Image (spheres, rainbow, N blue to C red):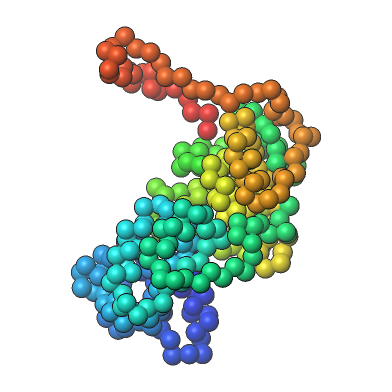
Length: 328
């Protein structure tokens, strides 16, 4: 995401004397130091690497005039708040702070106010709204049949360039293996992949070498892909604002897009929260091979009792662990 923003700034500043650079973790730090020594007008950075460079006296923030926090809800709500506060303190007190996000939940707004002074709020669209150009479809399906339904939709309904969202890296890898075995050209993004591997996967997707990208929310947040035809919520998010960010990857710049959501009995409450947030009902598609029984109840995973002390959890043998299969 930081790389994308730098590319945009390079385009915007083509006929100016402004200099730009980008720094982020997972890349060699010495070349970044060399660039900073020359001086920069616009620096795009991730908080961790920015603070590392400042700690090593490779970066001076005394003359920063404008501090911009993009994807502010994520920055302030996922453990970044302390780093953000440190960066804000290191900059001059005369700076202007700008926060950008498609969604600003109340909790995040409260956190934002700890670093802002009498802020002005500017909305270009209703907060947490979705594009009118996205056709949002909902499929109720038993959890154990999600992969079968996903394959059915890819064969018969979903075409073009697609991002599929899963909740965990294990889910991403499992689905990637399944789709690859079924002949689909697939890449994946998740937090355990190196920075280079993630950049390569995204580049292959943008070049059209693969047409399906499977990702977790954090790995895919903010990525800009032109001509994305569809978003698939293989796992519905338990945070409704995440749904807005996911489907916001498609139907950009006035284009049309599709959003397909697969909902098991466990996830029905997530649908209600999403519909309440976006203030609209998702179109339910009942005509598919794996319908969910309307009376189906969420699966409750009960912990197994063991013969050990009631104050200690029994240990499972390595053999029993290997026998256990993940549905995802």
